[in-house]
Length: 157
Image 1 (cartoon, helix red, strand yellow):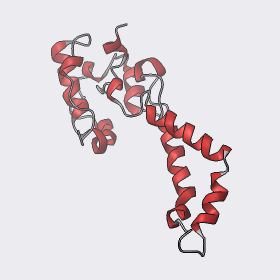
Image 2 (cartoon, rainbow, N blue to C red):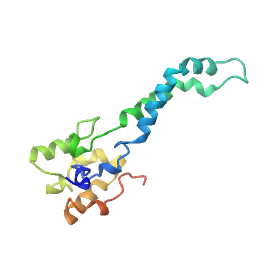
Image 3 (cartoon, rainbow, N blue to C red):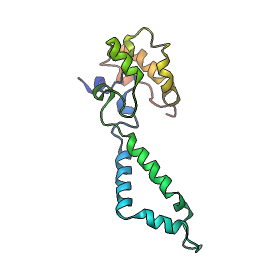
Image 4 (cartoon, rainbow, N blue to C red):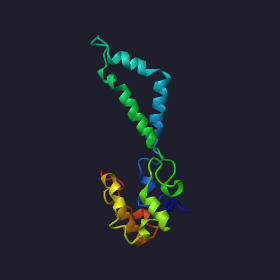
């Protein structure tokens, strides 16, 4: 299986473009959390965040625990297997994947109903219409040649 095919999700997204797929941010967040815990930075932040001495206070440290929660969420974002190889997104059950497998499809591009399928609504806030645009592109160029014509993955790109 070529990389383009392997990285093509059932919904038409390209896993290689995904923030979650093999992202360095998750590795760095994991490293930072480990370092902060090893040096017991939480205790330091608690003292500095509540210091009565104006020159010694770092009020932002009052939010240290929230910061760690965000770092943990970034760690949890990491995905090391593309949808087609790993069986969908690692953090949630994917109705699109389940539908394709149930129908015996390699992807939604093989389904006559993908243009009106409601399962794509969950992707809209982050991906806009890119999945459907990519599905049209796959239909036009084929699964092995569509990647160079793919649409941006995220609405902010």
